[in-house]
Amino acid sequence: MTIDNVIVPLDVPTQADAIALIETLPQVSFWKVGLELFVSCGPQILKQLKQRNKRIFLDLKIHDIPNTVAGACRAAASYGVDLITIHATAGKVALRAAQEASEIGAKEAGVPAPQLIAITLLTSLNARELAFDLKIPLELPEYALHMALLAKDCGLAGAVCSPQEVEQLRRTCGDDFLLVCPGVRPSWAEKGDQRRSRTPSEAVKAGANYLVIGRPITQANNPSAALKLISEELKMI
Image 1 (cartoon, rainbow, N blue to C red):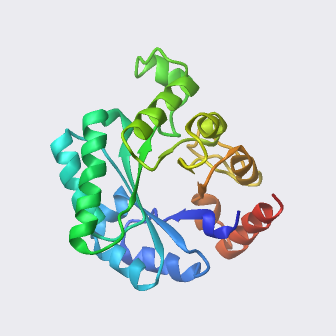
Image 2: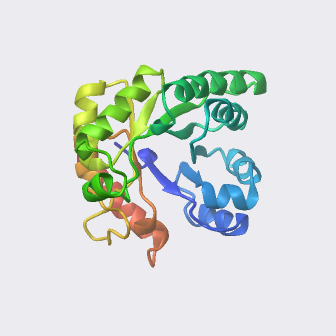
C-alpha cells in the first residue's frame, strides 16, 4: 500500500481553509469532503479539487427515505466524485435506489459512476453505546458485518468500518468488496473521539483498501512530516 491509499479529510469550516490545507499537502491525492465543508461552501470545493486532479471521497453519510436518498445520490454522482457514503441503516430499498440513482446521475453528467459505500457503524460509537443507547441486541462485530453484507447484497461497492472489524468483513465479504477505514491512528498520535482505532499498518494487514487519517496529519505541527511518517510505515508492510 502507498500514500495514495490514504484519504485525508478536509475537516475545516471554509473553502479558504480547505484550499490552504490542500496546498500545504500537495502530495495527497485523495481528499475527503464531509458535511461541515460541503454545507459551508457546496460543490464549489469539489470543483477546486477536480481542477487539481485530486480524487474525492464525498462523505455525506446520506440517510433518509428511499426517494430522497435516490435524489441526493443522483445529484452527488453528477459531480464526478470517486466515493459517496450512505448509511446502511437506511435499509435495502433505499440502498438499491441509491445505487441505481448514482449510476443514472453519473451517466447524465457524462462522468464515471462513483463507488457507493455504506456506513456500518460510526467509529465514535462503542459496544456499550450500541447496546444501551441504541438498544441494538447484536454484538458490535456481528452488527457491523450484518450492515456490510446488507450493502453488498444491494449492489454497493463496499463499506466503511473501523479497523477492528475489517478483518472479519474482508474474510466474509471477499476481496472485491471495498473497505474504507476511518479511526486509523498512528501509534504516536492521540485517539481523540475514535473509539475503535488501530494503527495504519494494523488496518492494512487486516484488509483495508483505504485509510482515512485526519487529525494526526492535519493538526500536526508539521503535516508533511506526519504524512511522511505514515508513508514510511505503509512501505514496510
